[in-house]
Length: 259
Image 1: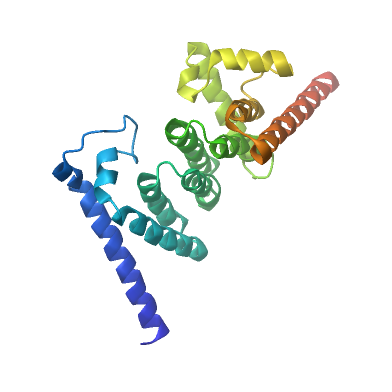
Image 2 (image 1 turned 120 degrees about the vertical axis):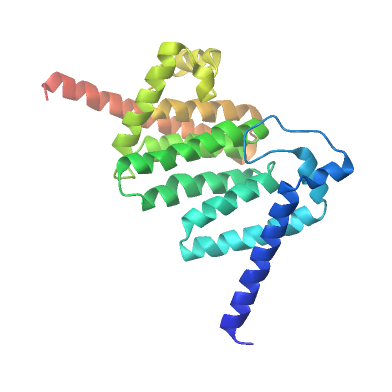
């Protein structure tokens, strides 16, 4: 058997197994066992009963999907990888690494393939929402997810590592402006009391700046962090505050100069 033939056969086995898994999921195989515990969250995580019905097959499928995901990443097929990552979040909803992996792919890999700033922003924002609205709702005590979400705000939106970072900040400021006018902070997963606590402690209050969201999520994650995780989150808070202060100083200097 040639290497090419073996590769094609391996790929066919992987695809067949994934299709089998999808068939089991969509057919509602869990009904056979009469299980009815359902997660009240959005897709891709649908039902505890379905996952329970997969039994031992679930871990096998997860390993195969991970293998395929890594190959797609190596091949630069990030859009296909995004679809496969959704399968992983379904199969392993309580594995933080899965959510971090999927969000990173959306916000960094796929967004970089887009030509226009608006299209890039859609993917960056999708990564933020995936972690905030799904990953953290299912895993509210996992410091890794708070860290990854805070880093998205600090670096992808709040720093200038991306040629379109300024555009992302403008879009984020508009979102925050709308939410603030309606006092609907819950739409961003944020608690007003905690925001006020952060404002008082760190003397920062411009929530339209992504760095404040970085501080917010890192600070919230401290409640669940220990050791290295705790130090990393504290470091994010320090860095985000530093970037925020420098930006405010630059804005004030610009205003004074009249330019």
